Image (tube, rainbow, N blue to C red; front, top):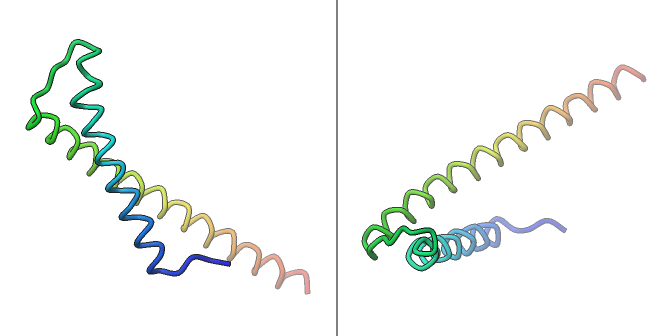
Length: 84
């Protein structure tokens, strides 16, 4: 059973919000273990940059997979049609 568009949107938003929170928390509390101590404002900027990069990465990967799926589907229909 496939996921509805509404639930896909809920999943995507949930994933994004959790990712943003984890990124901000790690930037603020994890980076000091590496000798970097960003202020809360700097942590917000860093987390926002990673958040935007993550959205772009995710979008590009989804489009690449979608293009690959479409190419395979076309290949199957052409191969199936040629054998008949």
